[in-house]
Length: 361
Image 1 (tube, rainbow, N blue to C red):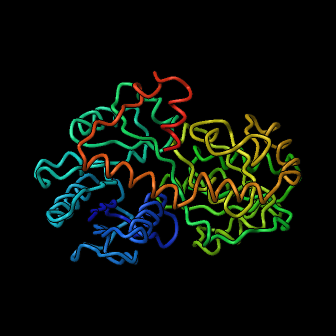
Image 2 (cartoon, rainbow, N blue to C red; image 1 turned 45 degrees about the vertical axis):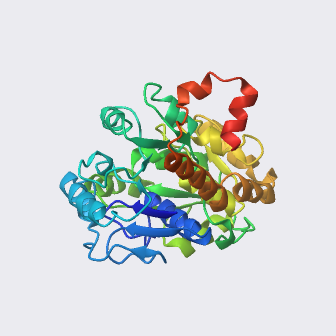
């Protein structure tokens, strides 16, 4: 197949530092190419993903992230270059609604954010012509009225992630500097467990900088250290040395990339049971799912009893790049063949055994 991939316009693929969607697209593009498919990528200038790229893209501008005009202009630019591909997989929100994209070219799109609220009518409109991928079963269940073609968990290339020993004597937190990510709860749990906490976090918006100054800075000390925004190597060094990753998310996150990155490093995950967390963390085996600071602290004290190699094995099987790429190829083939794909509500109506087979294959 010749597959067109459209990334959002603001961050390069792969991202130089923080960038979940862009990391997923990079892994997918590399995996598709390794499987023998041709890939044409439309992404911000400066992207280093080793596949053919649409030339002439403007440089990404983080300060304009989320600007509708930028995404619309990028969509027009991308689809003009996609005339000769067999299938387009669009990872933007606006792109699938562009009416002048190539006719009769199958379209697949991934919902990287919530399917609720203002996004729901947008996704409802696009599913008339596109195969919609949800990134977790929790995300898909949040919108039972939408026709969702497949749930595909993200994956990473675990071979590039060093297995850590967890001998640093600290817990870690990775994410954005936003209250929804649960940094405040992570600090409280670590202090209650009497374990040092090291924080790697991205700050971009004015609100994030203000939250850091007003809420987090007063809590920093010898036992709580802010390391700044980390690159890939620094991130895996931090994860590998940590006793556990604290990920007490305070919202129903559709998928938490940092959790599978932690498992790949062999590091257990202690999270609140929200959003996709119960689909990623096996409670009592690869981490703990707990609510409230006291329960999170108690779980942190038990983290060293968990088998780090088991965490790694889960990442290598359920959350591997190979599995993610294989799932996408299967959906692409179905879309090209024009075969109808069961919606989530149709799938949930099947017997347990048949539903399990669909999720496996």
